Amino acid sequence: MRTMIACLLALWLLPAVLAAQQPVFDALPLGEKPSLGLVTMSGVRLFTLGAPAGHLTAAERARVVAARLEALRVAGVLAPEAIKVLLPGPGLAVVACATQGEPATILTVEAATARFLSPARPETRYAATWWAALLADFLAAAAGRPPGYTAGSPAHRVLAGMAAAISRGEQRSWLEAGGALSRAERDALNAASARVPRGWLPPAPSPVSAAPAVPAPPAPPTEPVPSPPTAQERTAPKPAPAWQVERSAGKLAIRWGGKESEVRWAEFILLDRNSDPLEVVRREGPPFRAEFLNPPAEALVRVWMTDQEGNETLTVIPAAGK
Image (cartoon, rainbow, N blue to C red; front, side, top):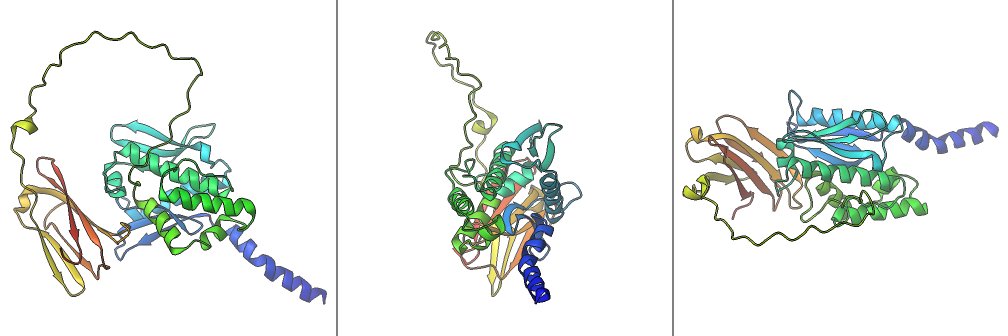
């Protein structure tokens, strides 16, 4: 009898033991190549990386980021208030964990990563600030604390519901809360991992001191001085790039219709109906062409093209016709 009770108790505790041994942060490839790398927190998508960096592919970058997060979690220093954005140099931003010692790098955001992250083409600092806010609110919600950094976004409503369920004991852990998400709620978090929500603003920093500000004396009125026309204003705008689209059963092909010597590089990002990225093709030399097999209904392709003069152009192409 005692043996049977012990066996039943062991079976009842087994899921908790296995969950404790599993890493909280993990990485998964997405796509056939694979083109994307996903960083997850107990099965919930946190970051979607779509650009390589150095000698690492997007999927390899995701594994590095997940390992860094897991090491910080095990060390007990990963907390919402410790997540910061650092600016080490022009065009770079770093999501870091600022502990008592040297800040620990979690993810470096450069121009290519920011370009993939959002249709609005955010600058690297803005893109990194969104991902830092998302990570901080994931950590807060997992602890049953109300999220505050992503306020005003669809993801915030989902995270607030998860935090409330955990604090009330309806779900015992972030893993259970993630498993209870509806399809629409999970889609909202998936989208948040891959793009900055339209109109989102970072939380305002706390005031340094409560001392009242002394207003500066008004400046004397001056007549506006017209600025000389810039080179862009003096030059007639160039026509939009001519991308040629071929659609057939189960295949979408996009190719550059002009001279390939005019193009420096091109990036093709296949998005589903929720603007969630599915596949990325990057061409840094000819032929400037991409093919997507069996694109889903209502899918779109964002094509970023940079010409030899450094001018960038965005073209949005529907997968199923005009």
